[in-house]
Image (cartoon, rainbow, N blue to C red):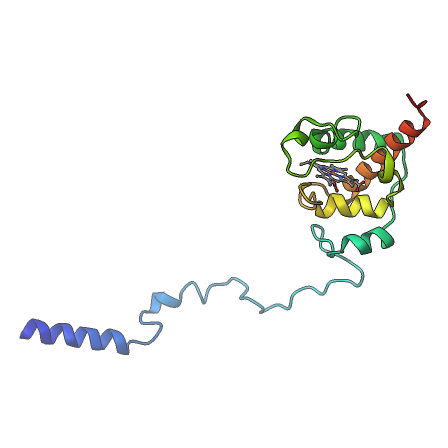
Length: 169
Ligand code: HEC
């Protein structure tokens, strides 16, 4: 009886206790640190983006709105080549003919990107395709920053030109 009574009193005491029961409960809260929103967040200057962010854009909008900001310098073409060989060649083949080793196991095979209709695709479309992916092609939005995607576009353009310049078999 006495034990039951004591535990009832203890339960009531706990239930009635304020949020901060002990002085040391709020030591951390009252510390010298800057409290959340005590200082207003910095105002972002107009026309700027977070370093690791880009506004989402549909493939249709990318196709008409985006233009390659880079020039086909030897450095950009070489960087684009290395990126293409690493990221795209497994499906599209080292030469871009759509014959990479992985393409056999895809439900939807990759395409020849150096001949046919691909040559008429605007730069913005290729950029948008790399950014968002198409069908079984993955998105590279997280693995290639925008300037690397544009370097790949430059390289794809250069191998398309080389293919058109080569004599037909
Ligand atoms: C996992 C395989 C795979 C990888 C990796 C891949 N692609 Fe693709 N790609 C595809 C498939 C599948 C399609 C869609 C083919 C279709 O529409 O029939 C495609 C379509 C494209 C197209 C549009 C072709 C057209 O004529 O419509 C382009 C351009 C392209 N890829 C470029 C790239 C580039 C550049 C990379 C590297 C950054 C890349 N792809 C990586 C599988 C891949």
